[in-house]
Length: 111
Image 1 (cartoon, rainbow, N blue to C red):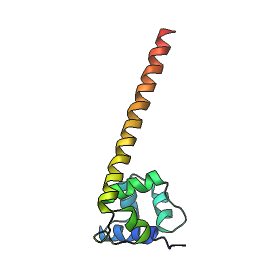
Image 2: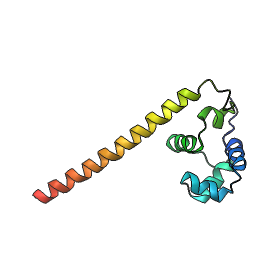
Image 3: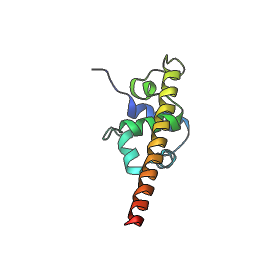
Image 4: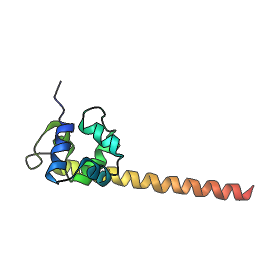
C-alpha cells in the first residue's frame, strides 16, 4: 500500500506560509480542532474537503496525498480542471437547492 503524506504536506504548506494551525484552519474554513486532527493524522478529510483544500492552497491532490512535487507533477493541469469542475458542480448544486427551496415556498403559498 502506498504511503500517504497528507498530514506532513499540509503541515509543510502551513509552515511555508508562516501560519499557525488556527490561522490555517480559518483560511481553509475549517474548525480548529478538525484542522489539528488532520495534521496529527487522527482524521482524514472527505473528498469534497480535500478538493476545497487543494483549491485554496493552490496545490494538487497528488502533492498532498502522494508527495509528488507540485512543480514536477504531470497532473497539475488535470487537477486544476478537476478542481474547477468540482467547484462548478458545487455551485450548481447550491443554485438548484435554492430553486427547490423557492419552488417549495411558492407551492406552500398556493395552499
